[in-house]
Image (cartoon, rainbow, N blue to C red):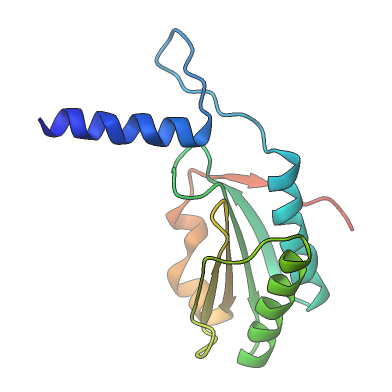
Length: 148
């Protein structure tokens, strides 16, 4: 019985992602939609505007169903970290996107902005090094960020 339940969850996740299963067992994921690319790029540009350091975008579509992209960056102090998160929130709000959840804003060690298909992580340098999401999600593809 548990096998059927797991299969049903897999089918729902597959439908949600719009995954196309060819005759073989491999799975092919579609490329980023213009809206998805616009969202992570807007978050990157907003972070750049507030002088965020070490900005990276990870494509998680092939390895998880809970989100499509991570934007990772860090600031040098709590006020800058909050300013980066605020700027990202304002820019995405202009595009009609509101976060479903915001975590860590008050302490400003690691602020997480959850937009569903996009999750933004704004770290302190110490927290970024400690949690090392790039290592944890090492199977994700690193997305090239176009020059401004």
